[in-house]
Image (cartoon, rainbow, N blue to C red; front, side, top):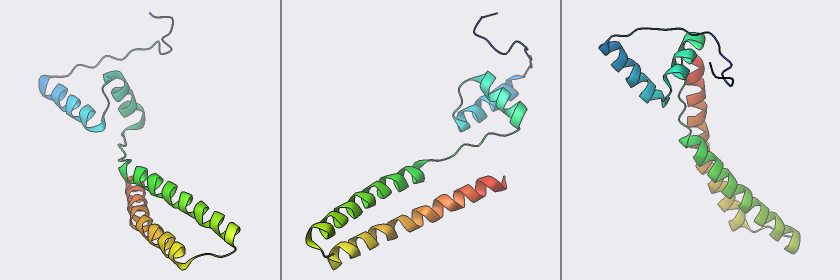
Amino acid sequence: MSEKRTRKNSFIIRLDDNEMNLLKERMQKVGIKNRELFARKMILDGYIVNVNLEPISELVRLTRIISQNINQVARNANFSGSVYEHDVLMLYAEVNRLKPLLAEAHREAISLCKH
């Protein structure tokens, strides 16, 4: 046994061809390539949650853009002492682009909690 290995107990399971194919499909579906990791997760937790992070990545990108624009408006306001209506409307439009993405992320989070 390797000195690095912290799990000293083993558990052997035998599968027929159909079961092995089903195991491989499920592993591929959740993006896990290590059979031992997949089996341990399923045995101990009973489920694996695969989260689509694309909406969150888009939220982060749009939030970054909005924060940069808010900083520019704040700098201009501090420099000139006024804020232009166009700048405020632009920020308002950008925030409105975030709303559906936030709603979708919220729905996804709720659906994960229900399972």
